[in-house]
Length: 159
View 1 (tube, rainbow, N blue to C red):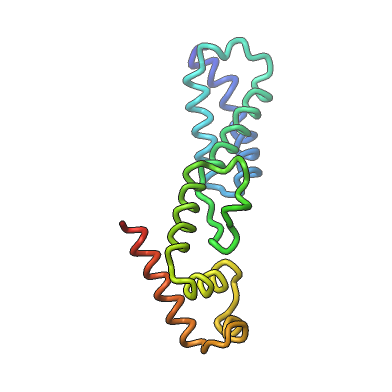
View 2 (spheres, helix red, strand yellow):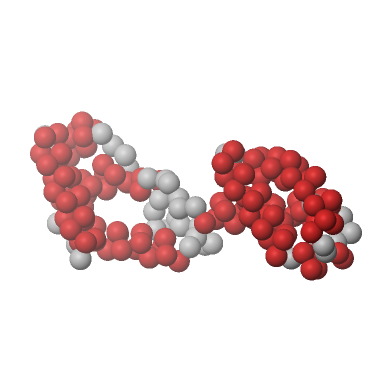
């Protein structure tokens, strides 16, 4: 496909591709980047684009796949309270599972009391007052214990 033919066929579809990307990614900057990535991909495939019968449908499919790839590459932003190793989805990235596994192994190395308090605070999301009612410890003591546990986890991660 010549450069002129590429401009004639593909450039007019740019707004359409942007709308698809924005619908999927829900962010203007990401959608613009995805459209740019699409055009780079199309340009690299320009020698084989002559056989495409419906450029709009073909471009839509490529745009959708590029957007899905972008979403998959993003790091999850969910806090630790919402993620547990036992409930990790089967398609979750191996690196994420290994990271979670390291965190849980580090938690297992903590003293039992700190483990319990950290799990109540971080994994179950209880307030210090709620933990105090459950355990009978003062909320100040709980804060200190949780702080020490977090510090040990941080030091363990640095090793």
